[in-house]
Length: 88
Image 1: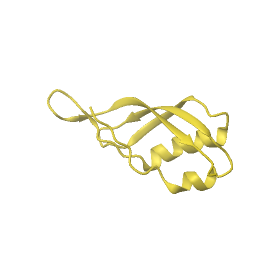
Image 2: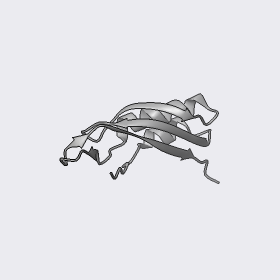
Image 3: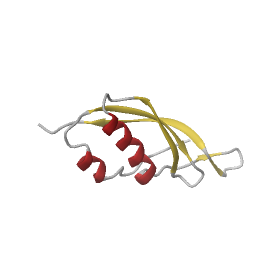
């Protein structure tokens, strides 16, 4: 199946403007393409970044849901990483 996140939200950039790192998450994508659950599986070292990543995924991310054999959308899980980088 194909999953494609869209904009994860500029709010995340604002609230995490002083930190950087990589957050890896296990996410559940519902049959409607929205993130219905998120768990940090690889933290960035910053609880602020970790929380912002899951909050942003649940609020903003949209995916093409997985399909069953009949072609109907179903819930699925996948991993996703977000890299926060401070500008030079």
